[in-house]
Image 1 (cartoon, helix red, strand yellow):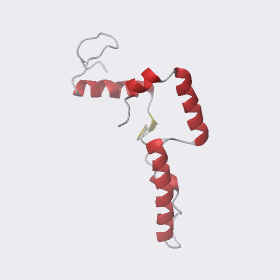
Image 2 (image 1 turned 90 degrees about the horizontal axis):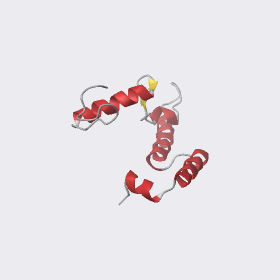
Image 3 (image 1 turned 45 degrees about the horizontal axis):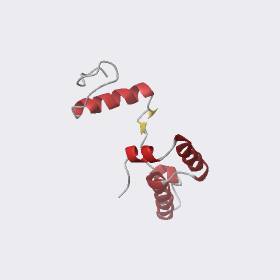
Image 4 (image 1 turned 135 degrees about the vertical axis):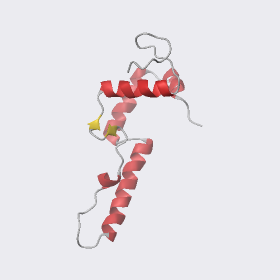
Length: 107
């Protein structure tokens, strides 16, 4: 079983995390994101083989989901905070960012 983020942070220094981040930037993504790219390549090959002579050639990016982007592109930090506060309210969480206490819709 994998470890939690809390366990990872307890066992890993910020220097080591920074080194892993730099390594990933050079070698490409790890885990599920890398698999998305590999499946995108495979799917593009299949789509291009099946498309015939007409139509636009498929590219791997056509089949890779953009998990971190909304319909208008990357979210601003303000939009991310509002989304987190809204989700926190849905699950009955506590908002300690400004007033503390129960989440009160101040997103």
